[in-house]
Image (cartoon, rainbow, N blue to C red; front, side):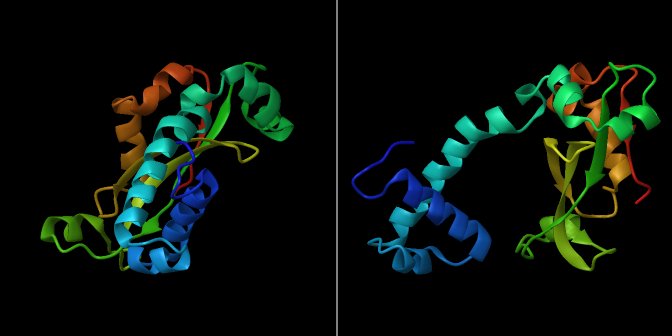
Length: 181
């Protein structure tokens, strides 16, 4: 992403963050950022999303962005190593599902798949994989919020389908900490 005559990279990121945080229409964003119309805002958000996917995500999210040695040296607590590992080469990761509330869809199938009977709202469920000091290794998903997708089913799906090459990164004797829901 480059600076253009319409906006700088800084303004593009500000527009994207405002859209994500506030959820206002592109017309409102155009007024807030003194842009000529909503199409310009839409184009800026699209460009920013593409830049984040292309440049930011591979460098900072996913198992490929960090080595096991780096996790062992910098992101694994001594307490976790003492409690859970037998040797100093085992990695301890924490996997937990969270949820993001979304608007009710117009499409019946999507309404049913995103409705959580537990939370009584429409949501999607990403699975967060962190180290024991809280460093986010990866975000798997998102998954539908219906009754079919509890944490156990999501983890089973991720391991069976080798999401983001998780099995290449994890070794046989590594420890995965989970909750019971």
